[in-house]
Amino acid sequence: MRWLIPVMIWGALSAWWTPRGPLTTLEAITTIAASFVVGALAARSRWAFLTAPLLYAVTVELVRIRTTGPSVDLPHLSPFGAISLVTGRGVHGVLALLPMILGVWCGRGRRRITRGVPLVLLTALITAFAIPARTAPIAGGIAELTKVDGLPLMIRGADPAKPVLLFVPGAPGSSERAAMRTALPGLERHFVVATMDRRAFPSPDVTVDDETADVLTVTAYLSRRFQQPKIYLLAYSGGSIPGALAAFREPWRYAAYIGTGQAVDLLASDRIFYADILSWARADGRAGVVEQLEEQGFPPYEKFWGYEPFLLHENAAYDQRATDLGLGAPEYSLLDKAHALTAMVDTWDTLYPRLQDVDLRRDVPRLEVPAYFLQGGDEMRGLAELFDPWYRALRAPSKQLYVIPGAGHRAIFEEPGAAVSVLARISGQ
Image (cartoon, rainbow, N blue to C red):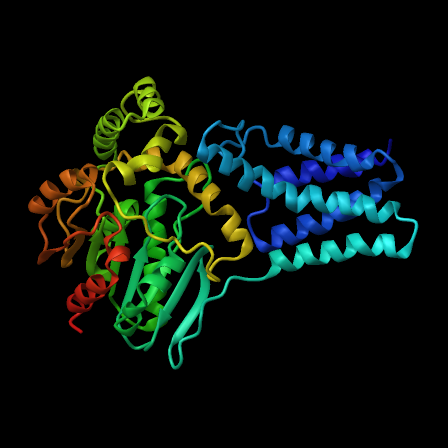
């Protein structure tokens, strides 16, 4: 049974190195190759097709038992739970268990052609996950994907000398690279548009200060690179919490702060969402939703799952327009696409309770830079009712509220023409 030892060692190393499964291209390709080799070593047993993958999976689960989050906890019986299972353990299985089985197949093959089939499949698997993300070029301009301190950043603009606009996306662990490129290409005529991802799969001790530091780090990088002492900061939804804090703490870095779908006090907002979605569910005959919300009571909740009904039903409850997140776009690698949801739910589980400790009415009573807000006329009540009093009380050198009639929470993506017009006006172009 010595063939079991490499399987157990690789399972333990894999769980220590990538406790949530491979998250980067290097991790994915290494996992595929190592799992294939371990499978080939285990091929001396005719039971290896079954026992090697099973032993690897058990070893991984035991070694990473202290790692927490929706993608690695026990499966949750819900829509997001099913997707987390597929994109968490399922993707890990494709990257580790499938190559291991191919390795066993290759090792036990008696003919050259029998051994060749798993090698062809292995090459196809590596190739699929090795194709990098990319963004369409701009003639005479700049179009690239890069990273700043590990944070993915897309930079696009028709003229590198134009003012720089940094966009901070909404949900914890989220990305809006494709949505910014496909919905708002008009911005690229007026700005060098830098779209950062929010920190994904953070350590358990990550804080709101860390997220704010991420915004400031990317800001400093853009200022140095484009030799512009001040840039424009556009922050959306949940990303407007660290965005507003960054503008408050280091105002000398910014030409203006622009909030859209502006959040103010997430805990107070969630309590309004709870009441509104519960009322909608009762009126619409959604007995299962009513039962779940009544059972869990008012927020806050310790885990992501308490907020799942909000994410599933807020568009219907508030009659919001759905917009395409663009996950099929080339701005995301295959691994990015596979982990888009697990990045959000695992990061939400860790970071969101800490974001709820922020109340901009207390923490950002003033801004030392011009403050602009681009809001949908049909913004969700859970955000609008907290934004209005904060905006009225906010002290700033100048401030202006632009409302797009008929638009909802994702106003800039729902009405991109209006959004581009307002942002160009703000920059004086």
